[in-house]
Image 1 (cartoon, protein in one colour):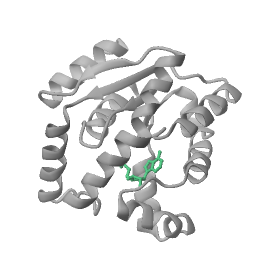
Image 2: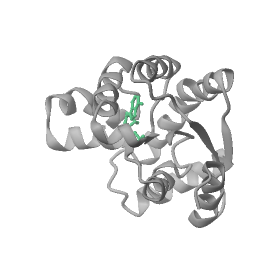
Image 3: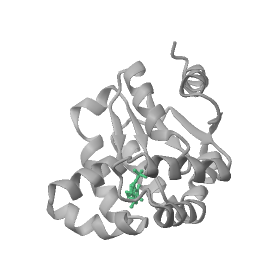
Length: 189
Ligand code: AMP
């Protein structure tokens, strides 16, 4: 299984990705987590990307593509992987296609978690209030992240539709219900 999870902030990608990775025994590759870890550790990468995370804007393509190239070249990704939060632009998607063709490990499934906008705002706002520990879960930054999503990331779904199949999954309901729908698409029990 080499998976891509698409969907706006608040769609439940992170939660579902973690559960699917456990079920399918593949590494969870979250560029957002990697960026937050870099910022937390104060590494050179972290210093370069902090301002983008704080503002809810995308880190430049070249930076995130380098990070993903390193990560997908690691031994554990030979058995498969789940990409969560990458690609976020059409340029990233094209770079990924090229990279995976070089590595001879093409994507097997692209899934899109669908949740209405009003529900997204509510979910992320709650997450912020409950102390998600994410400094970008404030109302202002969440609004920006959604705006960035619709402008820069929604076209990525179109890109994958133009080259293959995008499995749309209803993201409403309980965590278990959504997990069941995704597992069915992937043929996992
Ligand atoms: P996430 O946890 O996926 O919501 O990502 C948190 C933040 O990390 C985003 O708001 C961006 O600033 C940055 N980020 C994560 N993934 C990417 C990506 N693929 N391209 C650009 N920026 C990213």
